[in-house]
Image (tube, rainbow, N blue to C red; front, side):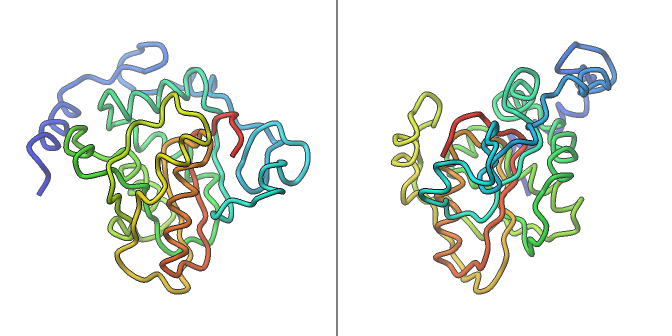
Length: 230
């Protein structure tokens, strides 16, 4: 049973007429023309962290110190309309965008995940927002891939300030020790889902926790990838 706020948000989704986030066209949340305006992540990218504009196999950061996740993929650059879509889902409660964004992300998700795990919100933050956007995406992506969702495989035990405006080192410190894996994942391959990867600090902290719980591999997929390096 969802919270009153969650139920209210679902009712609003039913009564608010769809309008394209990009241009305002009626009857759809993302029109065909605006979909073509989304900036695809370039072919030149790091094979490990998906950092764009990397002509070699690995970016310098991953070559020097590989992140704890084994592979990250993302279909879109975090700019312009793609950024607006993610922010509309995350901060403006446009839950109806989750299936659309999940369709796009699922097409490039790494193969081999046995369970789908969303990056968790702290219970306080989830109560304030009414939902966890990463869980909405993970549920939709899992359904498209035929992979079971494991919401409780990872929890956030410490409430952290927003990562917005923090440097890469500050982001890393902000999420250090914030996550816990309540059950063992011995030998499992995990597909970790989040909305956006900026520096990779949150994904890295989650992956580190999952591997300490015994996960054999942690693959990751996000809707967008910012240009910042790990």
